[in-house]
Image 1 (cartoon, rainbow, N blue to C red):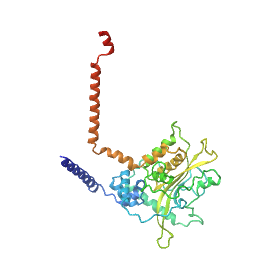
Image 2: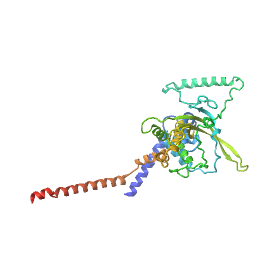
Image 3: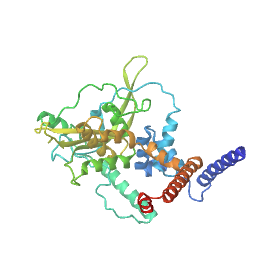
Image 4: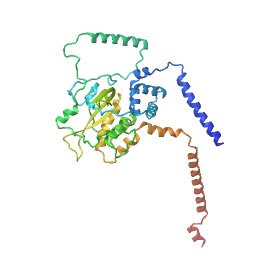
Length: 383
C-alpha cells in the first residue's frame, strides 16, 4: 500500500507539471517573446534580477515568463539557475562615483552639485488607467519619436548637450561643511558573499547591505515603514539626500596584463538617506547618512534600504531590527516556508489530533474521579 500511495503521488505531481507546461505553451493568447518582457515589463524584470541576485535581463525575462508573472517564483528560478553556473573569477570593486547617471534627484538640496535629472519615472504621471486604443497609441508614439529625432538633428548652441553625467554628491557637500558623520571605518574591506556564507546577526555591514539588496521589496518596505512609524505612530523625520539610477561599469583583471578591463555595465539604483542625530550620546551638530544600492530600477527598495542602514547603525547590538533584516526579509525564505504548508502534513496533524484526544480523555477521567470523591464537608456532616 505504501508503494501504491507513493506512485500515485508521483503521478499527480507529473500531471500537475504537465498541466502547467501545457497551459503555458498551448494557450490561445499570443506568445510572450523575451524582448517584449524586457522592453515592456522592465520594472518586473529589474525586481527579478535584484531579488534573484543575478544580472541578466534575458534570463530574468525567461524566468518571469516561466513563473507566469510571479516575481518571487521568478527569483527562485534565477537563484537555482545561478547555483549551476561556474565561477571564473571576481570583478574589481566598483566605485559608485562612476555611475553614468540616467536619473538623479536631490530632494534635500535646491542647487546640488550637478544637475537634477528627472529621467524616466512614474512619479509625476496621473494614476489614471490608460484606455487608449492600442493602434492609436502606437501611431502617436511613432509621431512623437519622429518629432524628437528631427529636434535632436537640429544644430545645438555651443556648450549645450554636454551636461555632466557623473555629477558630484550632496554627501560631499555635507562633508565639506562638517555636517555629516563619516562611517567609512575600513573594518569591512572585503564585501561579504552571502551566496556562499549566509548572513547571521553580528554580520558585517556589507553582508547586511547585500541581504537588503536581495530582499523581497515588499518585505523591506514594510519593515522600513514599521521602523520609521515608531510605537507612538508618529513618523520619524526622514530626508533623502540623493536618488540615482544609472549604469555602473563592471571590470575584471585581464589575465595577461593584470590591468582592469571593462566587460560591460549593470544598471543600479543608489540612494543616500539623511537623518538628524538627536540621541543623548550623539553629535547633534551633524547628520547621519545611510546607503542603499540594488540591481535595476527599484527606488522603493533602495530608499527603504538606506533608511534601514541608518536605523541599524543606531540600534542596540543584537537588536530585533538586525534579526528582522537578516532573517525575515528574504522572499524565498519566507515564501518557501509559507508554500510548504500546502504539502502533505498527514502524520504531523494526526499526532496533533491524537494528542488532543488523549488530553481530552485524561481530563474527563480526572473530572470523573474528582466528582466521585466525597468532599471534606460531606464527610463532616456524615460524621
